[in-house]
Length: 297
Image (cartoon, rainbow, N blue to C red):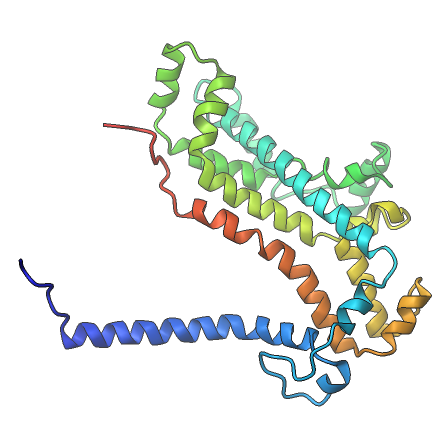
């Protein structure tokens, strides 16, 4: 049995360099997040002293208790979760259906529609016309204002269409010969093969919905039942920076016991961790081949 070839000294030095370099990249990437996490769990009075690294010196949950003591935060968290889940699901389906339509070479108006869609990426009506449109449609003060305007993203449509264009068109032709209609081809052939790009687009849409707060400020600032987590946390952050009174007196009293720096770091963790937990579930789709399993020899 032939022995395993030994690595040369040059290969070992190169491997050592790669390990050291990747370790430095990991440290540079993780340290800021761990530092923010440590400050959020550290006593606010002790935080003023400075010198915190990646672990809290005086562990406490008071910073998070203060944040979640604000009125409307639980409602905002629930609405943000519902908005992210529903908006992502509907957005992926809408973008993939439109992308499949534009990718069909037998669709007569695909060139004209592609040009019209592309123009919307460079030109828009502006903020005031957009607000007037939402008012005319009766979406002001409703939860639907989060879903309907963001239903279709032209960028996502073009990304998915480019992916579909790379798939062998013979798959669709053979399915038609077997008697499949367009709906069957889309659901049973195109969508399963598009899992990597759909996962990527779903992540883009989910992050956009989760991080959005300006639309809540514009359209639902007078509807507490439709508030979102980002909007409520933005108000908490402003109250710590300007010293203005928040509408919840109990939370305002609790804020006196914490520092603005601790509140900001705790808010950062609350905003980041939920959407960060989504990445491991979608990571496996990013490395799949474009036509994996589509053509068998």
